[in-house]
Image (cartoon, rainbow, N blue to C red; front, side):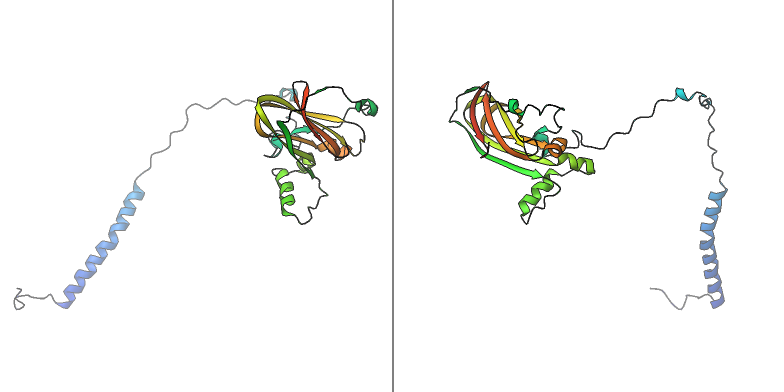
Amino acid sequence: MIDMGRVRLLPCPMRWMALFALAAFLSATPAFAQTSSQTTPKKADKAPKHLPEATAEPADNATYAAPTPREKQGPTAADRGPFQKYFVYASNPDEPGSEENAETANTPVHEKAALDKRIQVSLVHDVENDSDYKGASNPALLFEIKYINWGAVTDEQLKARQGHYFTISWQNGGPKSDFTARFEYRQVKSKEVVRTLTQNMPHVSGTVRSYFAVVDKAYLAYGPVCSWRFSILKGDTVVAETRSFIW
């Protein structure tokens, strides 16, 4: 225990002087550190010893490379959305004069036919993607139009996707084999002219789908499809077929 009788307290003025001295010492320490750090000289950056030689611009303008032509706005293979990549397209109108012989174009071709009951066409679904289409109040139809146009930004891209799309479901109940899906069609403005799209279908077994579309300039020139016939060929023989009512 501390004997308080033997402890001698400093006089009051002496205690205050000790506190003032301690405070002055503590406040001077950061200033000293800052001053010492500022007075330390920094190492100078090394200047480059070798500089590239200056070159003058050519006096002849022909020396410059020709300007790169600006890419046209419009759909490319990379611009197509997930819906379009499966389709076989008719996107350009026919050559001038190709529609003059409409009767010749409609002359039936005599080809071999051996219908196979194991090969059936179960569903033909078509949708017309047109800027005038309002979709009524059916959300499913509105979504389908939005899905077709997904990824199109410019007016050219949207115009290129306008058209008539056909998704045809069919199945092969027999052994796996190679087939050709053929889509023949007429359009409103070109009347009796028959055009044809084909799609190779290798190693088909079970249910598959074939995709055909008339879009862009071909659609704008001749209008939507008004009648069609879908055939499945094995080699040069028709093994299954379905058609629209007015074919």
